[in-house]
Every structure is written in C-alpha cells, then in structure tokens.
Image (cartoon, rainbow, N blue to C red; front, side):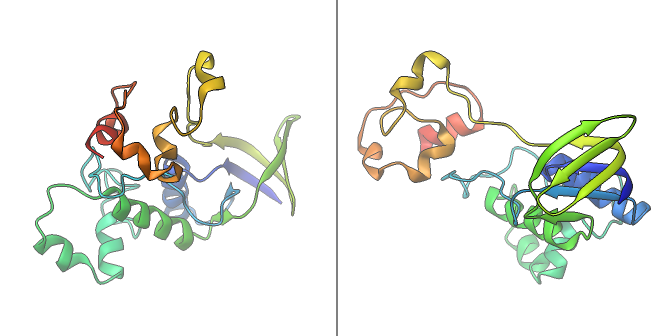
Length: 195
C-alpha cells in the first residue's frame, strides 16, 4: 500500500493529525498504534484531576471548530453535552478527556489500533513493517509518547518505596500512610501530594 503519510503511534499529536487528514483528504494516510484503545496515562490515579488546558484545546477545535472530532461533538454524540454544561465544570476531568481521545481513536478510519510497528526503513521513501502488512509512504510522523523517567542513579531502588507517579495505581495503598518525598514540579507531582 503506497501512502503519502504513515503515523507511528496514535497519541494526541498523531490523533489530531489523523482527524484533520481524515476530514480534509479522507485517504492516503494511516496511523498505527500497538494499543487497541487510546491509553492516556495508564497506571495514573489522577483521573479525577482537571486538565491544565480548556476543552477548546482538544484535537481539532483551534484548527476547525466545525470538525466532527471536537470535544463538544464528542459530548453531543454521547448524550452528555447538557450535563457537562449544566454541571458548570471549571475544567475537564482527565478521565473525561481520556474517554474523548479514545472515542476519536475508535471513530477515525485512518487509525489502526492493535498494529505494532516492527521495522522502519528508508530508501527514497519509508517502508514500515508491522505483523500484518508492509506499507510504503513518502512521509513518516512519529508520536510514541513520553516514557516514565527516573534518574539512573535511582534505578536500583525502584519498587514500592520509590516509583514514578505513573505507577501509583499499581503500588500498595500503604504508601498513603507514609511520609513521602515528591521529586518534580509538574501537574502529576502536585496531584501526587494531594493524593
């Protein structure tokens, strides 16, 4: 299959691009992700936290407010628009936004979940091999997301007493009864303290 674009990973950036391409061109691109569903922050215990951005900063609204892939349309198609408006939320809960991203992931025919990329080669054009296909494209867009990072000097210490915030949901609940030291100043660090 010869495409103008292959996306490796369907995180928020590539998912946004997939939605825009699907509405503008509707063909010639494919976005591959090893997961069968969108996974925003697996292992996070902060689903009740609000996003740091507003609901208009979704996948497509700033580029095309009339898109079928807006957060507002997601709420409408799922019968939740009036409830969302009447609840007078100050922000969007992370869990709600993750459901929106999974909705767009499943809805877009250019996104193929459950398709792990095994090899990428370049010889005038990109050749991408998965378990199920060999695809050629003129352009390649990579969106594999961030990896949890713990400084190398602490790798031998990781476990129930030293872990990345993305692992909190998998750690023994006894950690809530302990004194903790949070390293980092991002949203997850602040939410970890509040948890």
